[in-house]
Length: 332
Length: 209
Image 1 (tube, rainbow over the protein chains, first blue to last red):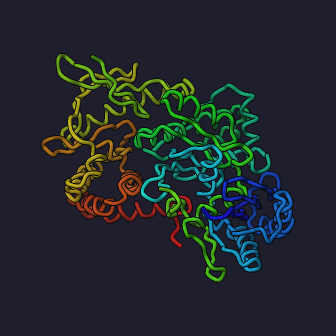
Image 2: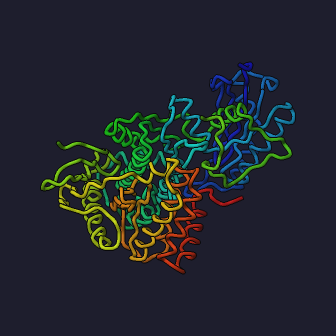
């Protein structure tokens, strides 16, 4: 066994700039974040978000070290989110990570952000060989580990679930990310309005729901009823395709990861689905479901221990980097 | 005597008898996780669609015989197809992956020529009988469409399952799938397969760097 290692993980794929310190037992020693807020009714502006990240990067890194009660010299490796995500935002995190790696002369590790969500979920819940549902603003995908990679067994053909609720929220005049607002509104209704239910094999399509829901708002239906109906329809679709993957793969363990894992209604629906099948459900804890440094730090540690690192002059970011292309060498 | 043989995501399959013949009962059970409105609609519409589309293609392909339909209970009683799932067959050494790929290609080509989209072309929905004929099952998500896009989505799903669940043989099976497809769809094949590529590229973060 090698000596205890301490690592720093830097997350900056989208609206969140997050930094976490972790040790090699998987103890999260600190996890600090600062989130870019878009103006009401609009989404993430790439340039503005990256400016936000640049402005607060130093401060967030310092707080993460302070909270963990460590010094720069205690850091053994530096992990950064290398994609997928928004180019200008990714570059801020990568630049900070390169600087730390050079200054401290410690290994630099590129981490796939989406894999980070899954691996952190497995660490925190003890999920072993689950079917994973990754639901966020950037992803809606069902995965299971098979011959070296987190393979995709279903995904959205157009919008992600996060985009769907966010776009409806923005259309109705709320701030992004609008997921929690939509969930709050949905709780006030029990009046189901029919929306397109589109499951194509193992995949889902949400664009029809978005168009129909916008039309409903235009026609004066209450935002509470529309929010409620969107959640019931979209979450049922997700439960169905996840159950398809469970059935096909003959597995009996499910984990929900990503920002939308914080939804209580999604969890309720999945609890019923899993109970009926006799499957075990894990949901990543709410404070780690959204983008955070911990997902990068932990996955960076797994990657480093299986020999993955990159020199500063060869380091990169990729806006498009599918999680099912990543060799998860640390998994057997 | 009624024995549950599979609890799928969509339906429960129960071994039964139909006038003395061994048969299966496919029952779309109510799912408690979804609202009654959604649940009733899905169960009855998929049951009817499944039967209607199977009847359209019955004289052209090997599919299970249907004995009885009860749309209210969302139940279909049909032939108990005996054989090995392609899913299991692809994972064993001795089978001829080329032949299996080519035959599936021919079958899917035949569906598409008749403007039928299967909607769920996973390897667990194809059963190789003792006489080597491949029987296609589970038309619950099928639809009729002339659109090349829909045919492309159908093929992409099959390709995705090969890559995810049968990665070691996916290239050999898929290249032979195309050959088999071409024997039926002729010069439309290239156009449809280029649409499959486009659909893949449309996937999140799929752009090749």
